[in-house]
Length: 426
Ligand SMILES: [Zn+2]
Image (cartoon, rainbow, N blue to C red; front, top):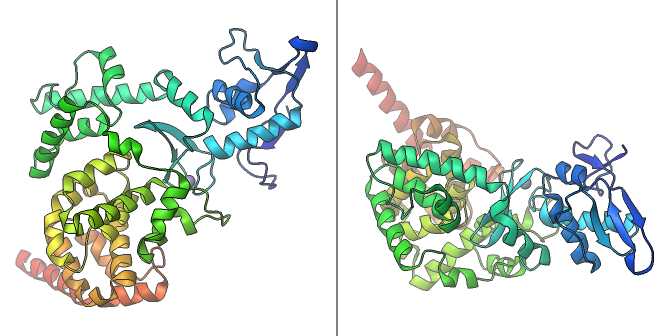
């Protein structure tokens, strides 16, 4: 069977992602004329999407009726449609519902969260959104519970339940029912996050969130109405992002797009924009509650992602950063939970914060690092090599050199502390 690159704009014959060329056949006459897409299941499999999504997409694009659940695997579009027209339409489906909006890789997983369709990219780690106004989006949302998410969710619930039992708490913590089938249908989507929290440690921050989660569960049982009304279209987010400090914009997908088009926006952009707006509304970053920030990240499905830490480092502090770090330590520790990648991403955000937008704070770099270290947000294993070598991953190399040079007193202190320890041991 002839194969084509699933991104037809990529002409490289060695491009990894291929699929069968779409095979279609026009059958019947007059009013009964129809187009049968013979190998739709195979094409759908290459794209890791249900065939029903694709046939439905054709239907919407071509303004034709389709069958979305054929018993005999005969996928039909009413009317006569030429193969090249279908292939063109399929390209649109890829770019809208498969390709990562950030890196254009097709290895994405569809996640549905709060009435939004998210593409979780296995290649670059970004989570981008699918345009919700496309007709297929409502179809995807409507058909979601039967989809692939179930397995993952059930696994999660079971694991969480095990954890709950282990910690001696009962299943009512996050308002869950012990009944499996109820759980699948009745819980709001953001419940995963609340499960995690309910099952986790019992530090102050966790307790606070649990209280909040219970409250939401009893009063509402779903996402807040105002969250639904937020305009999350690419244009709206891009417009909001323009008002952000330059160092934050750098983290956004807006100027990151390899094709130079600003068509995609990421969930991280949205998160950063949200914090920025909250700060403006409340009259300062310190006024935004940790729990609110955490919950927003959970709503967006990025509470456990390392890139979230980069956004946080750039948005939750101002000139008072040294005093603000200990106050945010509970949340930061929860979200970093000792992971190296997360610590590095957080330091990357700090580097942007002091290197680009708050250059006057560069003299405070040793204090900032010292506080992060003392609050156990950053470990010695990560801090030491970080201080020792500049990198152009988050800022330009010159800026990075400046920041890391400014960190020298802290690096020196770390070394001395270590040799003190050594001599104590002897
Ligand atoms: Zn990607």
